Image (cartoon, rainbow, N blue to C red; front, top):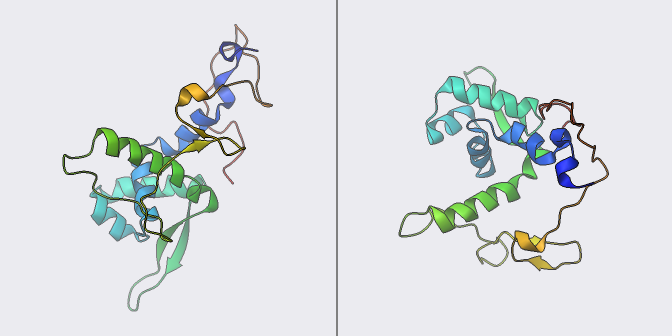
Length: 171
């Protein structure tokens, strides 16, 4: 079956974008990856309205990418911090790839605002595609796409279904 014949309803890219393609989702995840966990810290750092941040955090929690953990400071009500789940943490390579592209094409003339370094040796990190045998792929031209085990043939009369919530929940 050719890809033109495949029904895109179970596309993993489309389903992932339903979660992280919402406004502010990746920016909020970036802040949590960088170590900001409290609502007021995240809100102050990225400068969005509390209502927008609240909706974004709630969606990321509902989608299983963040978890809420209660904390309590003396004399204050119980509040929550936001921590990455395993599924949320697995999105780091996506953010690193977006950062690398932005560093190459959108950074200010002096260079990027941040540099990611390997904690062990201090060398800058790079994002690389490689196959299961360890070969580094230089470009998308080194990749072939073929139907996977979940491929379903697109029917001519079938209307396109939205991606959201037709597959398994994030792990």
